[in-house]
Length: 349
Ligand SMILES: [Zn+2]
Image (cartoon, rainbow, N blue to C red; front, side, top):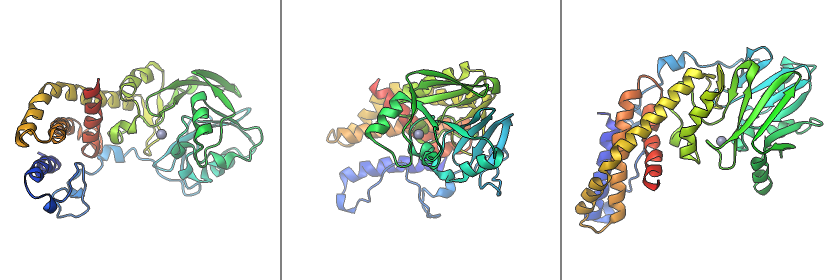
């Protein structure tokens, strides 16, 4: 058994104990605590390193640009600072930029200028309005007649709650928009797998390129709480939507690796394994709750509820880690959050 789960089980016992014994002597405990102290029962050293097959795919920074830049299809450039991702397309009628993360700083603009010195930037298409993916758009503000394309819901959100560095859209659409720039087709379609207002899937059919941000992390388990989704059910359903597209490249906004079709299939299988595992454990919820209630002599129902939730979460995470630890990196870091996200959804629906 992984030491992490010994600890969380111990934490549950400790919480139960704190109800019985003097509160003043209790150190507050929350689950999911990672200690940087190597001697701690929940030391960071108990977590597995990244898998070699993932490390082998990692992109490297081109020091001339300060970013990794690669031409993945003629005229279509993939860009990453190894944490965030974006892309740009050089067409005969100008350049189309797909997201401008603030972590790139001015480097994205510099890279574009070095790649296509005589071409003008005509469009910036925003996958969604979050600052961490488009807060670098202000660096394009001086470009005359730049079209900033985004979903109408994103424009509304930004009008009400402007975000630092995120330019206001100039061209908005409700659910779909087909753009052709210099003979290159861009098919935009809104979805709701991540952001609270709208996400946009950006598809270039001739390049077999699909961009959907904050979803899949190629080679890794999804980020905490399934990419911090605001819509759990839509997150699960989105994989089928992605796979309806004919694509070879999948740009998902994070890690240094550009994804492919297999990465989306793997992420779908992982997510549904979590879902099936949680739902498989749900019939035991009441028994776990009753066990907690009895332990606190029916004096603290919230505590019993938490014990039931933690029990299912931890049993789920243990199963998920054992099945996925050799297939995806950092499963042991995030599996409990995926199980918990699914569990919270399951108890409400
Ligand atoms: Zn986001």
